[in-house]
Image (cartoon, rainbow, N blue to C red; front, side):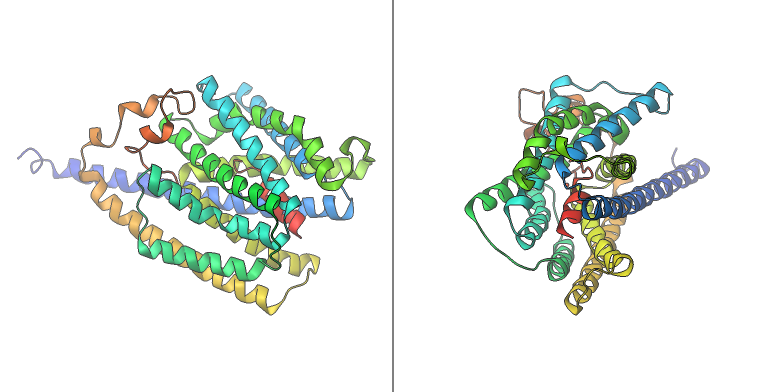
Length: 376
């Protein structure tokens, strides 16, 4: 009877929930928009830097990106733009090193495989992520979602995959790349949700360790892939200007990557990545006069159709969950294990995450943009 006696209170609560939902959707759209805009911008910048100015040291450049990102966030937190939150040391160091290794593997994968096989490797990340989420996090994917993702992958494959040349070493690196990338994106989402940290706080805590891995290994990886020494490169004023510009844009790329994965899911982030691929192919044709065939155009249209289906089914299923969600008791939606360290715990993080809301190219950092650039 108490509930029936206070209809105004209930109406107020429903209005507040609706307002929170609208704000959340605007935040997600803003994160997606920032991710697309900054990624396309950095590809254009790096295309000129690597193509016209011949600075082809992608791994080393990525380490500089992450170092500048850390310095920028350090200044921001000193100015009180955000409050840093301590994270278990073992968790953040392991996470940072794993992300750095993932970036290096992506560049090695491109170096030891054909462009077509490398594109197939990136396409394999979505189904592999779905398998991991299903097995370890008990996440359910509807047939509609799976079908829309198949359409998306088919379209991107038609548009971007050309030659498929296989070799044993390249294939091994590709498998390691897929595994590392999926696990990193899963952890990016899980750490934010389980430890209650924002994308900014996590990026600030981990970017220095990611940068350290690549600062040490980057010159060797680039030497292996290009047979050139990054320290012997002639750094003209123009080259330095474009490197600084690339590093500045990369701050937005890295921030938006953590933000998108944290607010959505790894699968959604990969779908967004394929949208960027289609946009980059289109911009390359319009602005840079890159070759563009009927196959590219048909593949992009199919991919966009798949993205539309994925978005439609995702929103529909999300609305259904939201309609059911408010009726559940609050204490059934939270676990005491949420505050436990992920990588620093004695037990496996996957074993503890079954009660949690599932998570959906390191960070992703600007590495995916570099990889696309090198593909061009």
